[in-house]
Each structure stands twice: as structure tokens, then as C-alpha cells.
Length: 257
Image (cartoon, rainbow, N blue to C red; front, side, top):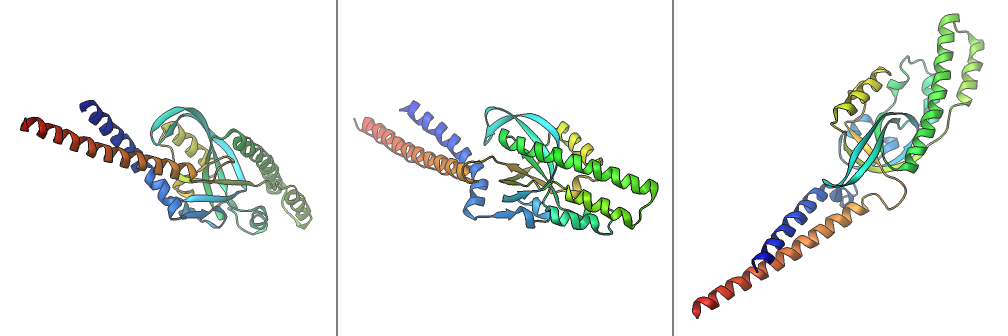
């Protein structure tokens, strides 16, 4: 009887921890607290939510970290996570910004960080980032040419031709907004990368999107884990009470005899 009570107590503690840890994510699902990435502003990435939308301007990855793959703190293996700087600005708006008189085209855009572990999604991000990087190099070369030789109306055609070559890739992403890694290597890679674009961490959202691959709807696993852990907790609690009552009755019966 004593061993059974100890086991039930351990089950209660473990399931209780899982219920507690899983509640925050499950609550976002219950409340249907969702963030439309493409209409969001920087400060919108400072609050927990389920984020969904299209990723357009992608740069990176600026960091690749091998991390423990955990389920609410329980290690279940290792994974490689890649980090990208992403803007929610579509290409038409991006073209308009370039054609405007602003000197800081990137400062007019909303930026956030996406962490990607799914291999298929990493491949899509890498492809889009490579295309954008090549286009930006051509843009930088054109700007340098204007600065050296001057700009006149005839050069407008060069800009139009370059804008016609602007990549139009977009990637549908979804996932939870999570805290950024506190790993010192990650922070250094991030800050160095942002500095190369005259950015700092205050120019992006506080939280990052933990992008998920194709599959079940975002939050399904979290809700299942929460309800399963809660059910185990309640069942073990009831069994514990029953066991304690039986033990008390048995003890009382022995005392009577």
C-alpha cells in the first residue's frame, strides 16, 4: 500500500508539472489569441500569441544552434535550429518604399525573428533568403554606382528593371511566439547580424516565431498534452484519496481488534 501511495504521489507531481507548463500555450488556443503577422507592428511581437501569416523578405540564417529538443522541459533528443530575420512587408509595398524618398528603406518595415527546425521549412527559408540576398547585392551595387557617377532620370529605367527582378517568394508560416534564446552565442550572432544592417535588438520584436512545419493545426499537440496531463493528475488524485481512505479504514479496523 505504501509503495502504491508513493507512486501515485510521483505521478501527481509529474502530471501536475506538465499541466502547469502546458497551460500557457493551451490558454492561447482556448482564447484563440492569434496574431496576423502581415498586419502586425513591431510591438505586437512582444506578447504571447499564435502567429500566422506570410513571410516575405527573409535574410539569414544568422545563427545555427544545436539545441536540446524538449517537451515542456523534458529532453527528447537534439535538433538544429536556424534563425532568420524576416519582414512582414510584401513585395509591392517594398517596391513602393524603395521608390520613395526615404533614406532608410529598412527602417520603414516591421521585422521579427523566426526560428526554424523543420527540415523542409529550413530549405524553403534558405532558398528565399538566397534569392533576396542576391537581389540586395544587385541593389547595393546600383546604389553605389549612382553615388559614384551621379543619378539622372535615365537611371530610372535601371531601377525599374531591378524592381522587375525582385523575388516574389512568400512562405506560409505558423507557430507560437516564444522568448528568444538566452544563449550567449545566439545573442552575439543576432546582435552582430543586426548591426551589419544598422539595426539593434530594439528594432525587432521581443519574442520570436517558433515556426512549425506542415502538419497538424498549431496548438493541437499543446492542448492534447495539457488535457492528458490534467486527466492523469485528476485520476491519480482520486486513486490517492481512495488509497488513503482504505489505509485509514484498515488501520482503524486493526485498532478495534
